[in-house]
Length: 258
Ligand code: COA
Image (cartoon, rainbow, N blue to C red):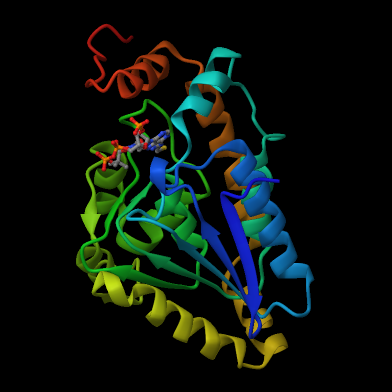
């Protein structure tokens, strides 16, 4: 079990903290396994009324650990359904209790797409949210190919995916990705207040409401379809070029890709 994911249950709120600040909370396989376990616990443990995601350090999450991408990609990529990330995605799709996120700094890749599975999102006004899957020659995940355009519209979602440039917290709020945009030093407190208020609501009513608002099986089926595109891209020459470029701190060169 990794100590880079920390959990604490208080007042019916299970708080999950990403705690790998020196790597901007990039998420490793071990961290996905711990996230999956915590999210499953949130659904099955009657003591948990609300799940809250937060982070240590100056970033929410830099997304999937790119060293893990290189390792998986060099082993052939392929369908990665048995990978811990898929256990986490399944748990997110199945979660029928409220989830809240407290987002400061960078939220990249799954750092953003995770927010699409949260019911209330608090962002710092100066947070920077991005989903640069195409910069890494990958494809959208976590049902974001449907959920992101559903929230922000096709053109904005396409730009977020294809250009990979970040939007700030105020824009995220204006585009419907967040409930509150507040100064960075207030994010945790505002999110904790919302989580506490949700935890006091009638638990069965709130679960039934969330279940009516989302179709878990539809989300999971889409996650699997996305996983095929993502998995086959992961071992592609263009993705390996993108991963190596990140490791070597240079821009990728896709001019020879075909
Ligand atoms: N995987 C692995 N390591 C990562 C990482 C990731 N996704 N994101 C950041 N890190 C590491 C960096 O390699 C660096 O490690 P080092 O100190 O050993 O060199 C450390 O975290 C700090 O990152 P750095 O890039 O120096 O910080 P920054 O403030 O200049 O930039 C980001 C922050 C998030 C903008 C930048 O790190 C980044 O673009 N990361 C990749 C994001 C990404 O593409 N994720 C995958 C999405 S699918």
